[in-house]
Amino acid sequence: MRVLLPVRLSLGLVLGLALLSAPQIRAAGDPVTFETIDGVKLSGTFYRSAKGKEAPCVLILHNFSKAKGGKSTEDGWNYLAGQLQEKGYSVLSFDFRGHGGSKTVDSTVFWKAPHNSGRTLNRVDPKATSIDYTNFKPNYYPYLINDVAAAKAYLDLRHDAGDVNTQNLIVVGAGEGATLGMAWLAAEWRRVQLKDMGGMGKPEGRDVISAIWITPSQSLGGFGQAVNVRNWVMEAGKTHKTPTVFIYAKEDKAADAFALSSLQGIIPGYARGKKPAKPDPDLEFTTEYGVPDVKNLSGSQLLDKELPTVEKIGEYLEKLIEKRKLATHDDRDFKKHIYGWVSGNRVTGYAKKKDEAVFEPFPLKMMGLNE
Image (cartoon, rainbow, N blue to C red; front, side, top):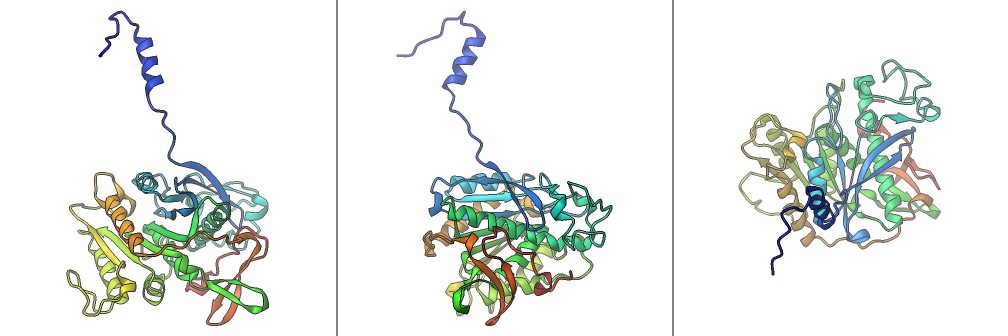
């Protein structure tokens, strides 16, 4: 039976009853912080999956520019993260150093790093406790790869705590964030756990089950040399067959051409609208998506909820996971292990020391970048 409220019931009481009966809304993501090897406090958001350690994990790398900066909460990043969380993924997004909420530094550590100097930063104050992207010289941007490495270390620690499964990692990057991600991912295929008696573990790149690049940039902050984007794409996508997706606006001719060229390099005989004569099952999920009917949009702008991009990403990952056998959660014991960079069967340097929780400074020269 339907009960009517008395006409004279106060408006305040009506509102109070409505609030009591309304479902309690909880923020989808929890704020988190973690530090880099050179003392930058990175600010981010962790979207916990209801599936816990059984869920694939997504790492988001936001786009930025030397002129306008950028952050992980701009455009459609929160929308993407929330939608992926609803589908059962755990997600970590964060602001690169000098951007958004990641401007605090430990002055006793940061200014001791050789790359954090007047050679790469404008208006250096050795006692400053904060930095801003407006202080970055063009040759500083490659060092932001250290932030990607710090995010991965943070996730590996949460893996060992049973919160996530970084053995099924998906990387989504846009613009210059995608460019940094490409270099980092290619390098992951050269990073291994160093075992007793000189043994080596598997390349860490194997844990990345997909890389999704949204309008990747072919430069870094106006970087003075041409970055080796194509080489990084080929190393991860062709040599090691990491499932790779290129997303761009169909009307963006430069991004369209880059995606086509990359796919032709990765997949022999690749042609749009045609199936390869001899399809490689390991490359089944290396593909592209041109967002239709958009003008002058790129990067995270393509994640707008009015566009189909986020839905397409969700559909792609669902199909990928249906066909790919995911790794079960095993303890990494990340903190206690030593990791190294290798070339062939030779260790060329240390990536992480024993009992440390962060990686050593990223070896830029190894990936064709000037230090």
